[in-house]
Length: 267
Image (cartoon, rainbow, N blue to C red; front, top):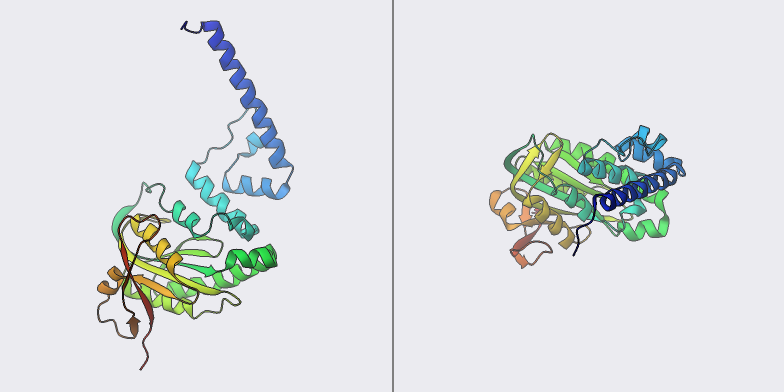
């Protein structure tokens, strides 16, 4: 087969550039047509203002892809919780497992995931305004509880929260206290796991995050589940009851995981 001539390569490159310019113009027109979308895209760095004004003369964004995507999803879901329907808790998990932060260090951590059972159906039935109010009220309760147990809210996406604690005991106690908050008409569920993660000022990356997310998905509304690793880490912990361990096959986790129901001990 004959190799393309220099003229042919030049023509092809020119054609590609023309297509890119045309696509940039159409994308900019589409974003500008919706003021809310344009404001969000600019705020999170999905696009730069110079590009939006003149898409053919400027690069679309100077932000890093993962950081831009994370901020865009967070703002979009805050405005319209229904956008979370196709993402669910896995979106928070994905944002916390794609890239290791450059300024982080690997250390032991307890991860707690929470979400509201039936949130997607609630949003579809009652609309974004009602769902947004529910999430905002829930968020106001989550922060103080997590801080009181010396933890931090790493990420939030819609009704889903990724929380971290330096030790297992405060993580377990925080999960149980969060179960007691009023999230009516929905019920909160939680998953707890311990392991190592790369921890930075504003991120948490590691297999422990993936496992904790899947543990939460295995829980029912009003229930907190912990792995047997958590149970072993807090052996003999007063005031907390660990139910009988059952082995589960969790989606996206190669090894079988032992899970226990955790609750406040009575009597």
